[in-house]
Length: 298
Image (tube, rainbow, N blue to C red; front, side, top):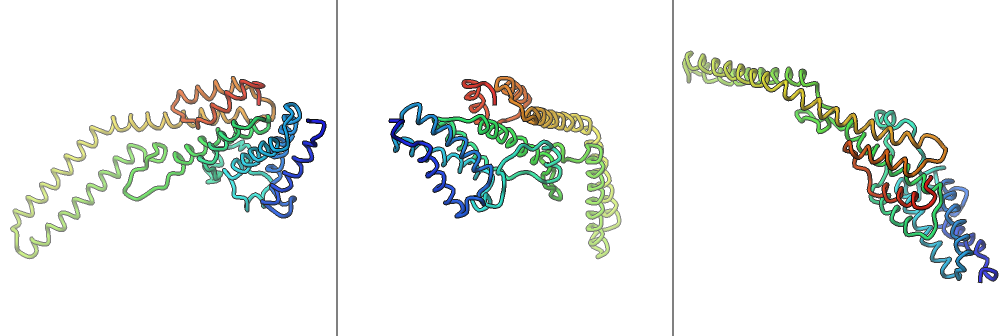
């Protein structure tokens, strides 16, 4: 059957039709998109030739493959944006700098996780696609967690959820006492109104002042007594977040080189980071297991 069917011609025709859906001019389509599509189509042609597929089977395989590539690319950009870019995902060598500079890449977690499922359902694989998926899945959690911890917006009167965005415990204590003092002054000023109106005597005003002073002293003592415990808790929380971020950056740095990486070694590093509280996307482990079961490198 393989002698009578030109698999490569069929794949070429399918590729042209698929790219035309994105843009009438193929040259405008994202270069990386075309590269990923070409890599997997080449593997599909090879698989079809080896297994003796008929035209319908190959066409179905190409449809599945193109749907995956589209889903994967749309995890980062829309089809319209793909006509204005050369790549949809590339390794980010300085993630913390990107995060601190508010250059966090847009990544759709649901679409990316779904693209993992679609990829693993394909009958073909490619090493460059493995690498791109693993890189983006690792970056997904790194950038999401880093952005949440380092770029959390501040709202007046509300303590940030991120330990790294909270005030130093001593400064927080000072601000708290200053706030108490302002509140006491406001309350005393309110108490002056009935005194000026003649509704309460001077002794009543004095009593109100003494009560406010007593409350200030009480709140100061409570704050001072709880300061060491609060300080320790915040230090512990900050340390935990910092260690998690450092572990994630260390794991991601394994992908800085263009050379092949051992899936087993990388999975071990990912697991160690998970032991420190990092919640990696489940798809990352699935792809790593799949790579390890095949070539073992990506």
